[in-house]
Structures are given as structure tokens and as C-alpha cells.
Length: 318
Image (cartoon, rainbow, N blue to C red; front, side, top):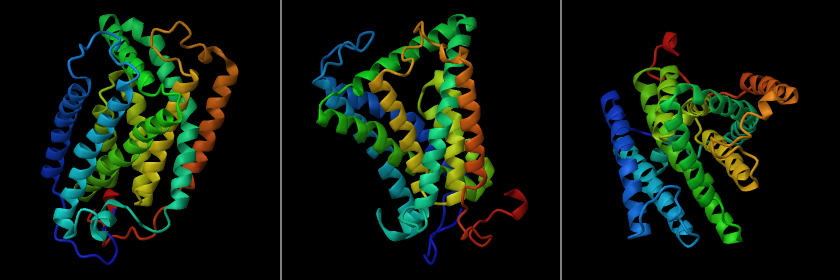
């Protein structure tokens, strides 16, 4: 990872401060989300199954979610980086440090999005395998399935708008906003800060785990960690935030389309779970897409400007 070419910087985040930021955001984000939800729903009682989430409340909930990501993730990152970049919140040096606005980002972004689409069958298979295995974990597995069922129900209601305005709003909040705000925080700030203090590989590994923990979906921890590692890898290679943002958005868009079309298995207790896993053609599809994914990863472009002078890590630690 390197600083923006030709810019002067007053400092960089230390390891302790980076870890402190991670802990703070993991603690504050759920609280901020709860407060915004309370402001939106007023005196409505939170009962099982989110039956309180009526159609008029959906746009308000979506707006609250989008505002929460901007306030807790995006703006703090811009402020933190501006402190040691010597520039304003949206100054060239601040954005450049995060990997925004660099040239040559279109090709990596397109390849990153294509790679995310190729990963979808494998990720879906992991989720379906979990659905089959969780009942054998007893009460723990049952609790994970119930929590995921509640989350799926909430997401389906948030994504359920059929009007043009509802579709646009759900796409903005569930696809675009997370792709920008979460990538600013996880890849732009956390991963880059860790790469400057540890090593790029350790930064990708740690950030992917934090990315999975942040979503509070223990049922989907493994798929989320894999997503985080893939997105982190392409950011390490490209040093351009457009690539991980497009990959993240493509994953969210695929999930939104599946929710709206009803193709996904939905609730973990669904009796149809695991049906695809019994079909030979499905595993052939997984094998083909993973092979194509491996070819894409091998040919993924690396930014030429990644020089030793820009990266404080010794060559042996890359």
C-alpha cells in the first residue's frame, strides 16, 4: 500500500490507534443502529418476526440504516485520515490515501465484480451446507438458525418494495451505501493502516475477520470472512478503492436480486434447503466457476506504483 503520489503527509495511523478504532466502531455501530431504529419506529413494540415493520416504516428504516453507515463509518474515516494527510475531509490527499480517484481503476473494478459473481455458487453452497449441519449442533445450532431466520425476515421486508421508488431506495441503502461506507472503513482505513504497521497479508487476514464480525451474522461468519479476504486481496493488489467497492456492491446486488425473486433458500428452517446440493449439475457449476475464478485471480492486475519506498514493510514480509 502506498500514499497518494506526490502528496505530503503529516503522519500515519499507528497499530494501537487502528485497533482502538476497530473496537470503537464494533461497539458503537449496533448502539447507533438501535437508537436510529427507536427514533424511526417510535412507540411500536418490537415483537418476534418483525411484524411491526409495516410498509410505511420500511423507507424510514432504510433511511436510518443508510444514515447510520454514513455517520459511523464513512465520515469518521474521512476525518481520521484528514488529520494525518494534512488535507480536508474531501481533499485530494485524504481521498488519495484511501485509494479514491486513482487512475487505472476501471479494469480492476470490472474484474473484481466478475470475480464476485463467479464466487456466488460456492458461497451459496457453503450456506446450504451450514443449513444441513447446524441441526446437529443442538441448542447452539438451533439458536443460530433462529437468529438468521429473523435477520432474513427483516432483510426481505426491507428489500420488498415493488414501486420504482421502493426499488431505488432499497438498492441505494442495501447495495450502494454499504459498498461505499464499509469499504471506506474496512479496506480504505483499517486494512491500509494494518498493512503499514504489520504486513499486507496479515492486514488482509485480520480485516476479513473483523469484516465478518462487524455484520453480527454468526450463521454466515465463514462466507463473510471469505468475502472479506477476497475483497481485501483485490484492494491489496490494486491499491484502488473502486475495485473492492464494485465487488462488495456486486455481492449485495446479487443477494438483493435473489431476495426479490425468491430464488434463495431464505429462512434457515426452509424444508427445501440443500436441494441444489444433491444435484450433480450444481457441483459441476461450482467447479467451473471456481476454475474461472482462479484464472481471474492469477491475472488480476497489480498497481505498478507499489514500490518499496511507499510501503514500509521489508520485502521479506510482503
